[in-house]
Amino acid sequence: MTHRPTHRRDIEADAAPAAEPVIETRALTKSFGRSPALRGLDLEVARGEVHGFLGPNGAGKSTAIRVLLGLLKADGGTARLLGGDPWKDVVALHRRLAYVPGDVSLWPTMSGGEAIDLLGGLRGGLDPARRAELIERFELDPTKRGRQYSKGNRQMVALVAALASDAELLILDEPTSGLDPLMENVFQEVVGEAKDRGATVLLSSHILAEVETLADRLSVIRDGRIVRTGTIAQMRGTARTHITATLDREASAEALALLDDVRLDGRALAASIPSDRIGEAMAALAPSRLSDLVVSPPTLESMFLRLYEDADGSASAEEGADAGDAPSRAAEPDVRQRAVEPDAPSRVAEPGTRQRTAEPDARSRTAEPDVRSRVTGPDARSRAVEPDALSQAAEPDGSVR
Image 1 (cartoon, helix red, strand yellow):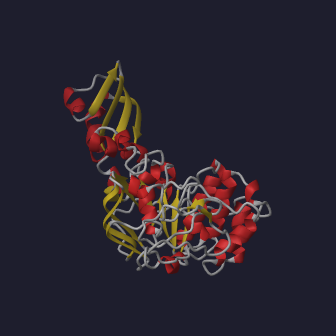
Image 2 (cartoon, rainbow, N blue to C red; image 1 turned 135 degrees about the vertical axis):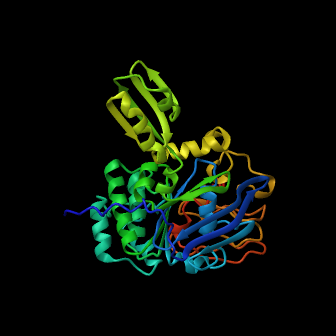
Image 3 (cartoon, rainbow, N blue to C red; image 1 turned 90 degrees about the vertical axis):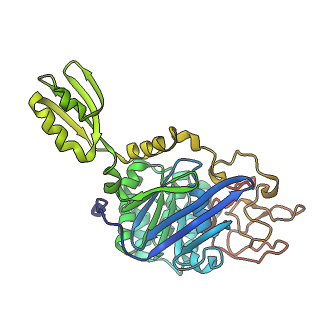
């Protein structure tokens, strides 16, 4: 079957979408012991857009997503998801959203097709034609058992289950981890088609080219705060364009003064310039008779790196700020490798992992993969959550990510 690729997103629009927010957080805070992960997060995702969510490991992305999914309770601020409270309305909201984590766990003895149908049933069912089409496009064998799948195939099971549904909101956290380049292209096509159907997408990815292709807008998180939000075009407006040229004549001092980071090697010129001053620079260099010219517009990667370098001189200085992205950090005594607080509703761990209650003498329990497991803490309310929405809620050793 031949599938026509969807048209490229119009990511160059200068105006932010005016639709009502599907996701809205204000001054959101979350700490793990004495380690703050979110420090007043303000995030807004409009209905019907693909919103990129960027930041290095430790910036707070995973913690923010888990708060939005109702897996963690925020310490302060407000969060609204599809008009509801992600902590109080978690069961109702999970029927309207689909979540794909970066490391999917499946039931070992259940086939991929059965897992797709089970997860889809928790959202009211799947579109059978779309399910069959996605299985074909991802070249997935739905008859294999969960234990037989590679990492990439487990990701594709979760993607088919999410994208074959009519979920209003897709929360994708490193969804193409383990996919080969061909399947990454298929992923980009089907996400574009989901947007065309009216779905809203929050896409967190380290593959910046993927975000650049799909995102209408994007937000950059640093040290638990949003430091920049806008379209690609808006961010390019303050970024630098790189120029390399071969000059037949020596450039004037006035022309070189317009450029930054100038490097001259004989007749070869390399420099950078703000994107909005390219025309002025070309006019000044024209008398030098350019025999060769390459103008490289700023990439999302260069803008991302420059934003971090301008902020604190090194993007790597932010490693370790997010407990969700730094599992090796020693846990504080009051949060000993727990996914929930003592006074919080208990959550179900992903299939095959162990969940700990808040009591010190409580035994580790393995969550049942089929229905809604209940674990009750001292003051905790019982709560049931669909399995796929809880992937990565706890590591096998109980650590919070």
